[in-house]
Image (cartoon, rainbow, N blue to C red):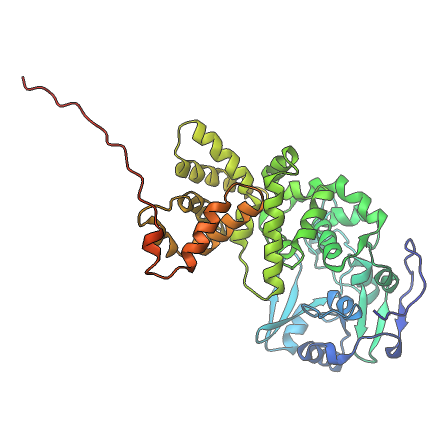
Amino acid sequence: MQVVGPALTNTEQSSAPTTIPRPAHNISRANISRNALKVLYRLNKSGFQGYLVGGGVRDLLLGREPKDFDVVTDARPEQVKALFRNCRLIGRRFRLAHVHFGAEVIEVATFRAPHGGDEEGATVDGRIVRDNVYGSFGEDAARRDFTVNSLYYDIRDFSLVDTCGGLADLKAGVLRLIGDPETRFREDPVRMLRAVRFAAKLGFRLHPDTEASIPRLAHLLEEIPPARLFDELLKLFHGGYGVQTFELLRHYGLFGRLFPATEECLAEEAEGFPRMLMVKALGNTDARIVAGKPVTPAFLFAALLWEPVRRRAASYCQAGESEASALGLAGEEVLAGQVQSVSIPRRFGTVSKEIWAMQTRLAQTGGKRALRLLAHPRFRAAYDFLLLRAEAGEDLQPLCDWWTAFQEADEAQRPGMLKPPARRRRRHSRRRSPD
């Protein structure tokens, strides 16, 4: 990485922006989305300021390919919409303009300012509930979350504007909040999850001041709507670095706020099946994402909640329920409790329950049940889940080997591999003697 900027210590934050000319940084227009450039050029031609900012600038400086490109401007959302026919305004808490270019969306935000306590910038107990107070470039820079995300690319002269020592932190591999960490985390507790996500993604370490506040304020996540936490969860675990993210979430006491029932199980058996299963599942998800293969939240939730489901099902079995019935009841209860913390859309929760239910059916390899199960739409997910359970230490390898061989066999061979169906016990009723 080639970054050139002012030599700041890790505890300093510059009071005035520093401009880095084009020859002194490594960002090239050739690596910026053509659509993002169109938005920047049109904003500037129309008399507005327009900068590339945030993760796109950060990743370009690190030599990474940005996932998306965000633009910030002094134009109000309605003015942005008037400039672009392909623009849609979204959000109430945080009003944004989305400029659509086919599958690509360029997000355009208006400069934000500190809250004045009016209706458009309301806070409750320090937490931002509305964030539509517009301001200047300098005010917007101070409102950003991390120093490495407060770097602005100016399309007018291709320079870079460093507002608070972000280049120095980028070079040092440090993730640091702008301003007082406790105040910033109270404004939006989701920033704690963002800190973990960026640390895992970039391989950065958290600045000591930022790090110290997280365990103490982790409980604030309970005030965040479960639906919003679902969206954040996908960013955490579907970014290709889920294993590292999981370890950091547990390290800082955040995981238990997202999955309290699972954390309770992990606390009892930190080195046993539950932890290994989740690590294996997250590692499998990371590998699929890197390979460009599809992933589904349903499989993720099935793995994250399996241990609470398994334990609750065992209690139902002891009370006399069949294994299949026990898994069904346990799955319903665990999901009902989980949605109080992180919302799980029905379409994903239903699939997770099917994956759990099929674990019992996979143990039945007799008769024609195996042939019918092989045609089930959830078979592959359930089979992969069975493999993960075996890798995590459960005594299931012979069953996994059988299903692997059964799938690889041709249709003529499969009938010979089936075990005889288990005989059902016949219930004998006493015949009444004739009167």
